Amino acid sequence: PRAAQLRQHFLFFIVPMLNPDGVARGHTRLDQRGLNLNRCYNSPSAVDQPTVHALKNVFDNLQSTFGERLMLYLDFHSQ
Image (cartoon, rainbow, N blue to C red):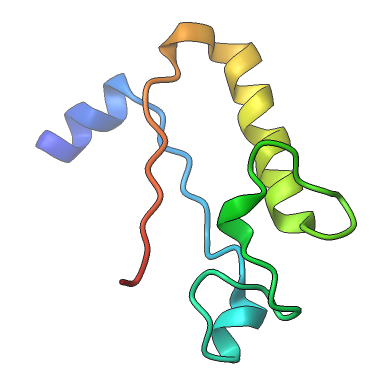
């Protein structure tokens, strides 16, 4: 019942792992080239950090669509 109530009142956007290629090499925050994906969220490069760049575009779109109703972004790490 609580989950149903949450779904009635909130939209959930679940983003999968952004660096599966890095994780396959044993990294948690680095991509396959060794770049730290947590250090480029302000201005990600479409060439150097394409997954972060795409995610930032999604959140920019959500922000323009929902404005102040966009309440929370939560980033989980395996550590």
